[in-house]
Image 1 (cartoon, rainbow, N blue to C red):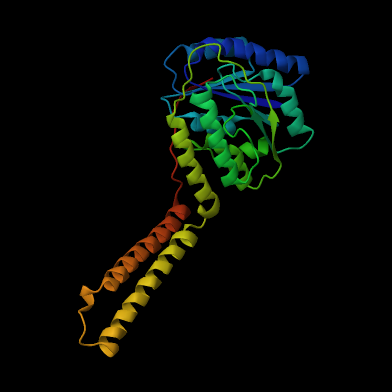
Image 2 (cartoon, rainbow, N blue to C red):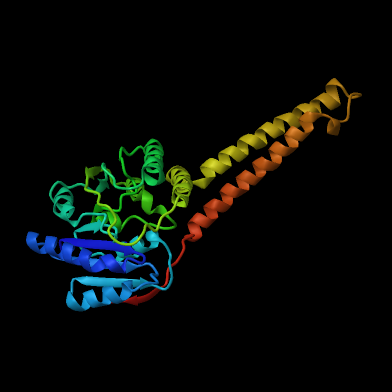
Length: 313
C-alpha cells in the first residue's frame, strides 16, 4: 500500500464527506493505493454515522471510535499502530489542510527518502492575536529547545515514513512534538514543506488559549525527557549528591569549629550555617531518592494513559 491517511476528529460531521471525496479524488488521479483512517475522538455529533456511511461506500475507508474524548495524541497513536501504507500522512478533519498536497508529500518521503516532512502554513487565515502570535512564540521556543529548524511544529499536515510512526510513542499531548520524538528516536532526515492553509469552512475550532499553555509545559517535559528520560538518576542523582555534599561540608565545618577552634562559642543550632547544612542534606537526599525511584519506574512500567475503543470498522 502506498499511503495511509490518518484523520483524528472531534465533532466534524459537516466536513467529513467533502474531505473524503477530495482525498479519494487525489488518490485515484495519481494511481495511489491507499487507506483512510478516521479516528473519532469521542464525538457527540453525527460524525460516526457519517464515517460508517463512507465506509459502506468505499472499502478504503476505515474508522475507529473512542469511548470518550481522549485527545489528539491518543487518536494519532492508535492510527499509527493501524497504518499499513509505506507513507503515512496525517491531516485535520476541518478542511483547513489541503489534500492536493499529498502527491508532493508522498514524493518527498518515498522517492527523496526523507523520514518526516512537516507542513508549514506560512500564510494563515487564523486570528492574528488569538492564534498567529502565540503560535509564532510557541514555535520559536520549540526551535530553540529541540534544535529542529521547523517553522510550524503543530501543523496537522505531516508525512512520515512508516518506520517512523511505528517507532514513536505519542501520548499525553505530545502530538505537537512528533518531529522531536522522531529525532530522539534516531531519525535524522526531517524537513518541512510550505503548504496551503485554508479558512475553516464548517463549525468552530476545538482549541483555546489553554493549548498554548499546555504546549509550553509539554515542551519542558519533552526537553527533559529527551535529555534525561532514560537516565533520571543522571539529573536527580547528580543534583542530590551535590546538595548533600554542600550540606556535609557546612556540617563538617561547624563540627571542627565547635570542637577545635571555638568550643566556648555559640551553640551549633544558633548558627545559620547549621540550617543551610540541614536543608541541603535533606533536599539532596530527597533528590537522590527521586532519581532512584525514577530508574525503578522506568525499568518496570510505562506511565501512559490508555484509551478504550468503542467501535472499529
